[in-house]
Image (tube, rainbow, N blue to C red):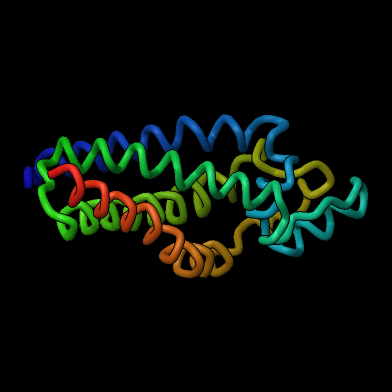
Length: 168
């Protein structure tokens, strides 16, 4: 496989991810159940004191739909990445895709969550603007990246590996 292509793909993947996540997090979409689901529980509780309570559990239809669309989108991006990097086997497609999912998980956690989400007031839910300490919960975001994040990343990696094995 072409290692220089993988590095470029990782940077492009971070750009695409940012272009999707950042505008949504700074707009009214942050008030949707699938977005509120990503906030720490104490922030959710404070928000729901002044706003209508909606189901933001992992089992809610809106959260499942958003996660499913994310998997589909990741599969498309990762499949193209695997083809461009020259993957020819299931293992190559899987490892490339899984590596890129780990990369995007780290990027999301270490940069978007720990730096931007914690410090830019535009990401804060209405009524929770005063909760500086709650927005700086590094362990909450790291746990989410490790589990279920790694499991979530395995799904598109398996699909891409299978697709690569089928077409090559």
